Length: 90
Image (tube, rainbow, N blue to C red; front, side, top):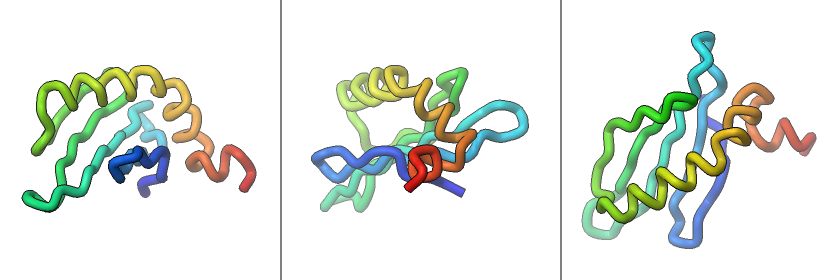
């Protein structure tokens, strides 16, 4: 299951999985694009392994890498709590 984490101003959606038994969390980034349909990338925490990067420029990926690194501690916490909505008791 993937949980919503953040939606950026350009409609980029960032979601994350629950924490897997091996301690890893999948983070998925997806941006709608009129020409290509969607641009997307996948990161695995806590080791910051990136794969399946489609459509993003190097500059965009630098931004996402910083964003995920700055939010990794929250994403890891929410992954253990069933997503941000469960962690915040909504």
